[in-house]
Length: 107
Image (cartoon, rainbow, N blue to C red; front, top):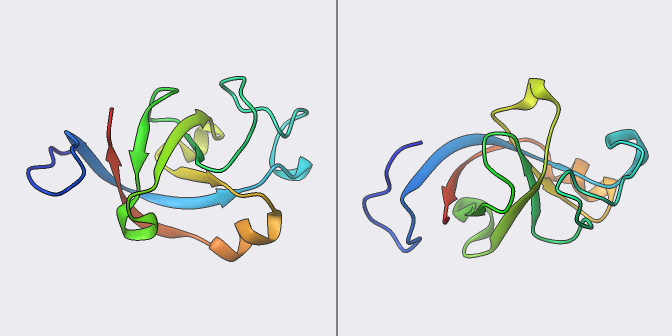
């Protein structure tokens, strides 16, 4: 992570990461598709990221402006440097595709 020196994000850290999306489809998750690795229910604003602690709040300004996401899920180890955004349907997750964007850590 690199220090953020300026900008409206009130953050001390940021990094670029590959950003993908997932849904609660059984083929994309484990045996409890609507429960995150942190034990909470999936909902808008939840992301999976192995390199950040549960509860960490982040923004992805280039893709979502000021929207705040919370890390409450994990990905397979092979995806340890990526961010996965929860979507309400598999079709929306597929439509999102694969992007690279700056992840700004708020806390």
